[in-house]
Length: 568
Image 1: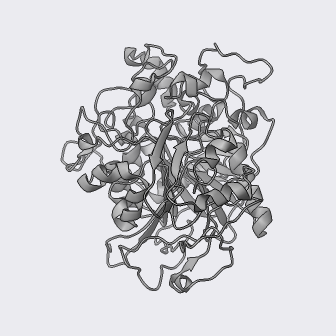
Image 2 (image 1 turned 135 degrees about the vertical axis):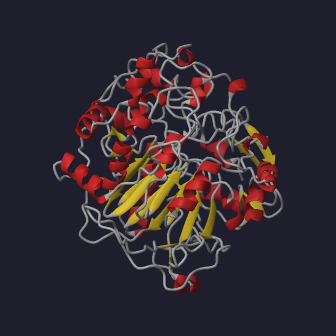
Image 3 (image 1 turned 90 degrees about the horizontal axis):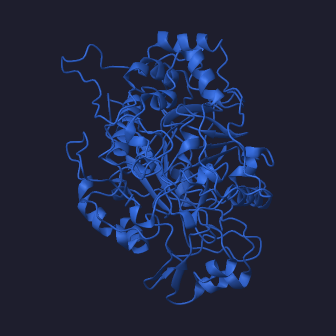
């Protein structure tokens, strides 16, 4: 099936869906699924905007509210995770995941679902060591600290994901797994994002928790965003249990802007005969049930159970019996019910309410799932706990309070023995302070923040490129355990690939059927589309100048075309 992967959404659903539609018409293909890797910004109304960690002057409604209100419907099934710029009061209603609008599904703090037999997992938020061991204690209205800590990942969610034993096909995180840059073209990355050099050289770029999960899950694909740059890598894991080593193909994409690599279509082998509907994953639901009593809405530190003689149980992986029990709880129907409903009023452009306070309520989807599986609604639990830490109230972050979100934070060490997140001090002017304008003079040979060619795909204009990147179809191992419904399975690749070889992605001008010598190693062509923003051929031609001066404006993501054309 055709899976469209998108980097940072920033609420620009109209533009993303327009880009997919244009590509479908141009190439004669049909996209089956859209995956968004964070900063989705599911903002329903003016009150939600005050729950995003961005300065007030950069809060914009964007277009999600149209899909929430029913004015529009997503033309393709969309699955997303949270990042560090979200309407957190909205996403907190769905700790286990759920529909934020018809045909748009949020994976929750952490989650695994199935679509056409493909197992798709994700972890929302970014890593910060000083919040990592805490529970999900935040509850609106947020204070200056909780406005940020609410989107920091927690070890309880990583612990749940590490109970997974069955193969995962696709996994998503917002920030990168630490060290993944060693498996791609690091030099090109540093040419495009010079401010990352200190973290790369010190080994602090990325999330140690995500790196831990990458080693444990070893999915076929791993998709990320956060750093606003396209970066591909291929990692060969160490062989386990005398089995052939697994390969993970990593891809990070840019934010949704003209002339940026924000969208990539990947060919993923689905499982014939699988359901065409989005489904619950029995193993994941069994893990949620097993770990339910471990969840505490506290800002106190929590350490996961270990096999050290101090805990009666430390293995919470799902047995066949537990998975069968979940299937029974659901009456044998694993299809996720399409039970979306509005929980707060949607934005009305004809009646703006700029002084509206953030609204918060329970979500019927979470209530229904908790009742069916005997789970605890941790959002309600956090509200009942009355933690003064989160009751200060706020109207939003100030510019000076913005996190340096690229890797980690200090204060307290994480559970990782080699945690060096406190050493991170790189300044990311593109992501960390997305509310600022900035200018940068690129090196010789770098055109529009990319090397060798443009990534634009627009109705009017050139799309030539010398890029030879490609992506491959998934390679799955045959599961040796029973699970109902059975997981997607396929034979492993016949020939292991080199561990330090970068993942190849196709040139923007390549068609979906275009071949290459790399296809002999199992790679298939894909497109790197750009949103159809109405740029002219003249605007694209400006990319061919010498050493351009780049002026990036992020305050409205899609502002006037002339601002973006100045990138050339």
